[in-house]
Amino acid sequence: MTLKKLTIIAYADPGFSQKVGDYSVQINPESYRQTHSTQYTDNDSTDTAGVTTKFYVQDPQKLTFDFYLDATGVVQPSITSVATEISNFKTVAYSYNGTIHAPNYLEIVWGNGVSFNCRLTSLDIDYTLFQSDGTPVRAKLSVGFEEYLSPQEIAQRANKSSPDLTHARVVQGGDTLPNMCFQIYGDPKHYPGVAAYNELDNFRALQSGMVLYFPPLAQT
Image (tube, rainbow, N blue to C red):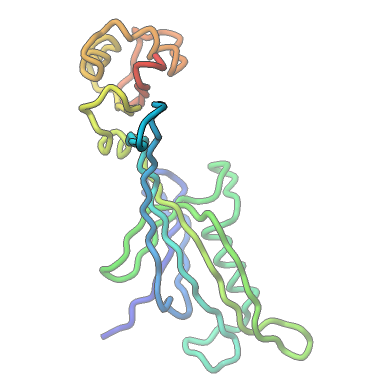
């Protein structure tokens, strides 16, 4: 069976359709960590025996791992330069892409176990072995990635039942702001506040595909 290497594929668009490069690690990570977190807010009550919490938001998932580069010739497949490999990795995952005015969108793929759309959020490099002239020949890269969700995916994940949460909705053909407010709040009269919240110049001219945010009633 062929050993599958962890590969980071770079894209120039949030739809992950315009591939601009990729990078495969020399040595697969020994482990990786996925982090899930949920935020809650405390109630404002006083003179109580305890504190209740209310759901606020689920944070994007995070993925972290370490991988090693070795240019001593001992490890196969061999590499000729640690510095060149780090540069190649940065070009794919870290460097600023002038076309999109941001670093690339990334997909991490490792066999059938990992498929993760994300952006690089942290990179620490430890150089651990050197030639006599100071050239590094071994390094450990510690990397962190944060899940990337499109507005459409956020809208799909949103809880549609509670008016106390901020909701993201993708406008469909025929949608009007009063009708969307009725679906979320049970009352269309909140549309002026939602229009102001989204900085809409003309709430009557909604375009299909645009994303609108519907805040808790106290903020409309």
